[in-house]
Image (cartoon, rainbow, N blue to C red; front, side):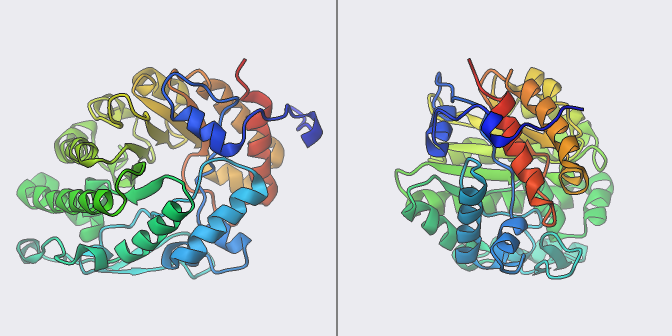
Length: 368
């Protein structure tokens, strides 16, 4: 196992973080080294002495904590608002913010759809700007705008968010026995996200707006690649194409969990506007980065995929080795690569392990 070098033994950067991200998002330009965006939320508010729930329920604390943690650790990128249980609160359900010792992120406590009759009743909210987390997201986007950074907008995935409207096992049963019910709920999420895209392009005209979508329920542990093509792909593809036409600049899609069987289908989606910043796609540790590059490296910037459990439970030496492997594989991606955790960095991860990832990106990630 390699010895971790001291920081003075690490090659110095030739670009600032904003310069590095600008280079990454400019077609034909290469940054000085692999950027590091850890994919980090509740850790940051805890890091600043606030409740971990504040990263989801308080836009100002969320933005400030993320930016202060970025300043402290020196990683790249900016602040982002989003969580995997989106879609329930916005349609009249209820969520619980993470407050307990083992809580990591919001969870659904009451689904807005409980019976088949509820499917006919439910509608896209008329006042979409006051639906669920949208007001928090809007305040967060305004702070991004004032700071001069790209605005982000959580927009999916339609399939995962439909699985937050109704108990996921019920959605999976409907896919087999009553597919029209499943398609209706997924279509409602599509309509909701497209309305959000329209609002954001009106509220932030002329700005770079990145759509963010992530789909843990699309994992092949829950649905087959064939089901992905029927129930997830058409709606995600439509949202991307129509949102890009409305003025969303590009997408970051997080392929969460074991989705090896879905990679070929993801090729059928668009992630950025022609001639503009390329889209980005991140992967869990279950998807080998070499395989991800083979399948999607000519379409998107590849991101990932150090296992979050190792970031929390592993030694610094173990994190160094995993990061080294990811960086050396990822930097071969033709459109660029970003070092990232395979999913959210655990709230109780040792701070030095995050610093270790940054050092490994600096040590192994420089381009000639």
